[in-house]
Image 1 (tube, each protein chain N blue to C red):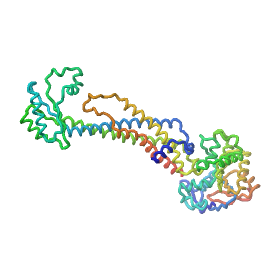
Image 2 (image 1 turned 135 degrees about the horizontal axis):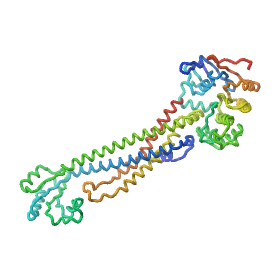
Image 3 (image 1 turned 90 degrees about the horizontal axis):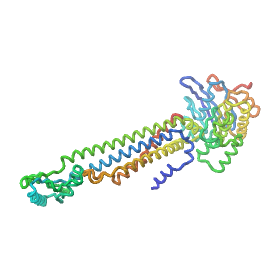
Image 4 (image 1 turned 90 degrees about the vertical axis):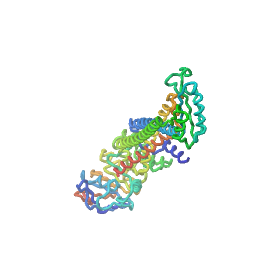
Length: 225
Length: 300
């Protein structure tokens, strides 16, 4: 599903990773931890095809991101749900339209899909704010809206980069609950976070693996988490 | 035909993909205004260029097929000498028709200088014979020699001396007009490109979000091209309409301009002018498409 093979990446000669490999199985739950600036976001961006590895390869759904055309990348992103810490929206559209955006641009705009949008908004607790503009939502609501947008195309993998970075602990728990529900549905979840208490909470509820980036390497985190 | 119908449908419809591109405030109207102003200039440049091209062509034809004989003689001899000249012309190969310019025609010719009510009939005027030639034309040297032998007071004028420079000038003005139109179109291309780039820079977040949710590049390009092309078409249509109204409302020059009598646009010229908004649509499609593709390449 997601194979990272001997990947190295650097910014202007400053190495971020060196010779990193990982094989992500379907339905698994991963946490990616590490200090600020260790390369968590770079790792997520590499998996999403927003960055191309300098050495090594990343295979997503059986295709190497290095050889993907822009069409292939779009196709891949339709099967990936991506949530960033600073979740971005189209400010001129309502939150409902933003959540429905992946469907709209894919030409999937039937009544069935409309019903799904409503159900999804209820699931993330934003159904009463469907007509609000993104700027009218709080940080936590924006994160939930970003998660709803990420899952509306029913992706196989969800890549979340610090999804709880800008929200309080209560909202972090709520977002984690949503992600755990998605994992129960068979989705592969890959979350980068520096919040170890969130990792501990997740581990008490699901069999999650924790990876740590440090000193240019990706390693299995210890059991002390 | 179906191509044009589809073209208008695509351009004028308000499909879903247009909603993803926000209106960028005053730049929206700036693009429309720029397209309108440039179309206005393009139409005027094109119109003057086409009129001059028509004039040059018409004068060229006249030059080839017309000439005149002027006879200066005392009044009592003038009628006889005119008859001799007409008889000579009757025998000259290449003459299609020849007729004596009457008093009313002379009045019309001199009206811009002397006024409508000038009593020309009381002045001794030279006789003027207008000659229409066949396609083969006249042997001017032969006719000139015969006239100098049989009718020394007659002067043959093939209009070359004064029509040739005017014709050359008209061709030059026409070429200059076309050059201006090309410059206006190139400047429009640059302006639309700059406007598209400015809008894309302001909307880089839109591109990032669309990429994030797996939007195909073709969709993004089409959305921006449609949005921009609609604005450009609206401006260009208004500019062309306004310029056309200015051309229609130009004062009627009447019949007294002689060589400038045919100062008007032919049907084919009008079709060229009507095609200006379409040219701007093509410019917009090309410029916006290029700008969006370049921005997307930078984003990965």
